[in-house]
Image (tube, rainbow, N blue to C red; front, top):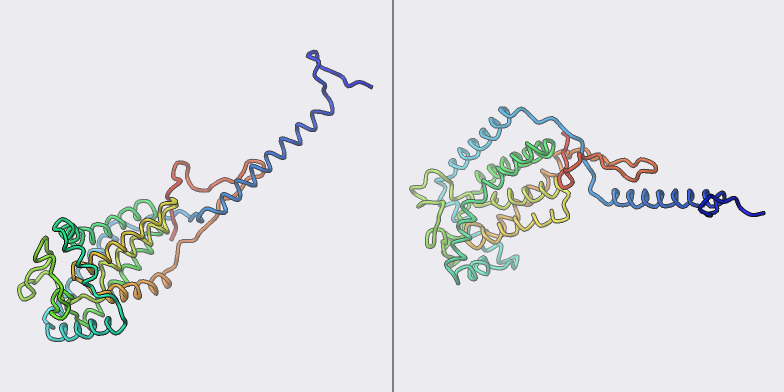
Length: 300
């Protein structure tokens, strides 16, 4: 028996169920691919209300003032600071760490490079950290809360170490045979130790330049979703080379800063992650707002 045809002569009947089955199979395939892609993405986090701005400004300003005042308490411990410097220098040699001069020597080959390192040391530290806090406060409130707490904990622990273990930087240590690049090539953020009342130059360990830079990178890796976000780790790496190459810090200053940051990150609660949900027959859907595919909000 022949199949019934439309006026155009195309057969109908049995062909329609086959086309419908093919459409459902293609839809299931697309949904499966979408679900696998969603599973491969970093988890999203819940939105959160921003903390009150005035309270946050007062907290950050208060922490900064306490830190600056605390550093001044050990500014006159010159003898102890130099004795500790010799101990750190000999400990690094006992641990077979490379000399700080291995980083400084290439910088001294050109005035432009050493000047750039001094500028980086003097100008990037505070602005980069402040910019991170402002961006997180505006865009990722819960990430902001965690980062602010971690920075406060690390800075407080660093202040305790500065009080307990005053340390002269390698640029002041004759045994290191290093150049004070800030004083020789400029710009320098420090004056002569005896007349510099704005900073404590005997607070080398731990290096908050490195600790804060590492926190900036970790926070941006956690709060963003771009495939390029891991490049933020170049910031602490460059900071490490700068603080050592300019003879403002020992290798161990950075090691101690990282050792303080690790437990602080482990103790502070993380934003709660949630996965995007898939709708049957429509593929996987993201719960993030449209148009914000690189950065995701967070909740406390």
